[in-house]
Amino acid sequence: MKSVKDIKKLYQNKELKVYEVVEHYLKQIEEWEPNIHAFLNVPYKEIEAQLTSLKEEPSDLPLYGIPIAIKDNMLTKGITTTCASKILENFIPPYDATVVKRLKKAGAIIIGKTNLDEFAMGSSTENSAFGVTKNPWDLDRVPGGSSGGSAACVSSGEAPISLGSDTGGSIRLPASFTSVIGLKPTYGLVSRYGLVAFASSLDQIGPFGRRVEDVAEVLQVIAGHDPKDSTSSPYNIPNYLENLGKTVKGWKVGIPKELWQKGVSEEVLKVLEKSFEVLKNLGIETVEISLPSVDYALSVYYIIATSEASSNLARYDGVKYGYRENNTEDLISMYKATRGKGFGSEVKRRIILGTYALSAGYYDAYYLKAAKVRNLIKMEFEEAFKKVDIIVSPTSPILPFKIGEKISDPLQMYLTDIMTIPVNLAGIPAISMPAGFYNSLPVGIQFMGNFFSEDKLLQFAYAYQENIDLSDKFPPLPKKEEK
Amino acid sequence: MKEKDFLLQIRKTAHLARLYLTSEEEELYAKQLQDVLNYFAKLQELNTSDVEPMAHVLPLSNIWREDEVSESMNQEDVFKNAPDLEENCFKIPRIMKRDEE
Image: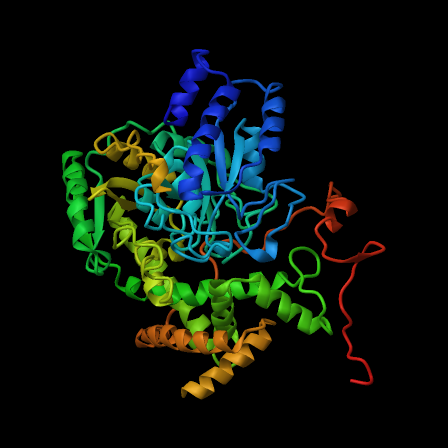
């Protein structure tokens, strides 16, 4: 039992019942959790309740009886949603995020809430207030971030699929570090209602899975306009499954020289050689392209993302919900003490940076300048997609790094996202596919597509998967004494 | 900017953000953010005089909807997570300082 496809087959042949599949994954969780800590919460009671209510539903629902893990920054009614922050430690949402609502309606079973960098700010999951998630392939290393828990649980086999959110690479980087598939859809394709906001013009929800078909199935369920998110796309949603398996012969793939020259490590380059052989065998024509402004993407991103975050996180003030520091003499000192104690180090650093970038005297030099360069970056991608169908880059310039290796140097940590950030700034979709291993450490490859071309992007990824298929490769469960 | 001036800037910014920082945090952030801002300085190399700023990727402007009555959260749910309440109101510490202070 590896993928959604496998589970569906077992149901069709009446070989397993839903509760048996759920039990299988709960057992996996029991075995793996002491090693990796991918979950913040596995709500056994609610799982029971979901199993009971599913009995009334028709078994032909698209995700009938499929367990799914949800990053703990998406609201789940009645199940704590913490954003891995002390400030929301005991927060119980009164409603479901739109994605959660749609998944439940499609028959999926929410089996747990996964760990993340606090408020999705980070590239390693080390910024969680409730402990780091470890990479199932090497427990001394990070799983990437910020959706580290959602990636690690699919990688280890604790869940067949999961949802993450991606603001600057938070789905794709952990997918690459843990050898699973991670898709960041076009900005606006998936409703953000009920996704705790980090940087609203960049945030997007997307699926993790082991197979392209699985990712496509989840996307089919969660994509589409939502009246509760006015930035969600009004366009019709195509069928994401019907192109899978069709040929991609003759497609043009762009190789952006700026990204490939950007300090990509020898190890990553070595593993990706095989991917290029595959592309060649698929009858793909590769073209060198130039995206000159991506050299500035990291700066643009950290100005825009922190500016938006400083505004979005103003709501955590200890009044309507969340943590409050008591015994303060007046309102302002209550705000300051609550936020000072409730937020972790990286979140505070980003609030300061964003507030600084937006403050009088600095706005033009930082935020306004960044918003202009962002437009340049977007225009360069638009130009590129007039010439090519797909753009390819490594997902990460480096292999999964050791826990603690980058945590004291924010700039070094930020540089991990150099390949993924331009995608969020432009708003286009991108997918990270497992490409292979270097000394048993996973490497991923990133395929970027034009706006709302997820159908094409998935078709391309599927063709790649038919040649490099790592979906049945699981990390070995660590022996008990190593715990 | 001189190190000491920048530390003052961090202090001022923390006040604007309603964020209490310890003096260790102030010093650490001042140093780290100076590095990050130096990195950002590269942006000024680019000529953007003919480029429009972009706040949003999709060509969406105002989205309107009919003002229709629909279901909303009940009061119990609204107040469920509140740190302090009094008679269906969120309760906060005093806003004004006491006279004797």
